[in-house]
Length: 278
Image 1 (cartoon, rainbow, N blue to C red):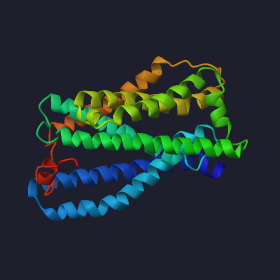
Image 2 (spheres, rainbow, N blue to C red):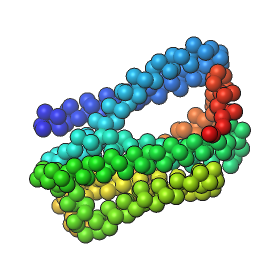
Image 3 (cartoon, helix red, strand yellow):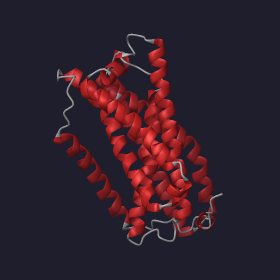
């Protein structure tokens, strides 16, 4: 695996991932801002045409990034389904974050007319859909590795199911990442109750952070010689999350003060505002 995991090629791939993500975000943002000024419907068609290959590029780049940044911490372990496991969890976290951000902005007078109960209901359906998809993919990975019982694959789960407090974290993820949010969000009434939907989204986002910790830290403990039976979160873990999140939110909120939050000249905006759930 040295041909893939050498330092030079690793940083080349990192640069490629960020180039793809930055190029896509800049293109869609700038094109949408031009559309806000001109109202040209051709720009909507242009963004739609770029969206399909853009989604493919994003899916491939995020998959290989998951291989490089998480799976390679244990260079002997591999799973062909790991990329989509990370992808599914990321999209689930995205919808949870979108619900929380929209509710926060709405409580401060923004988006109040643009996002209503019908839209939150739809976001709730997407959220529970990706909760189920994440559970399906995660179980598929576990079941296939357990059934094959190959010595280069099973250590990943031995470190997390057979070792001290990590087994407890694994059970917490089964219940907190799927069982509880699935049954909590299953009701139509919950998805249309903005307070309960926000609570469910916040819970899912917090558990997803634990899931990322569960992916990384057992391997780090083994690689650094730390007691693999220990579960010792550090203040540095929280500091890293707050630091990265702080930079992100500072930039996003700064940009939000400069331009409209709503795509005011999008030709589909009126239909979106009049949306009704079936």
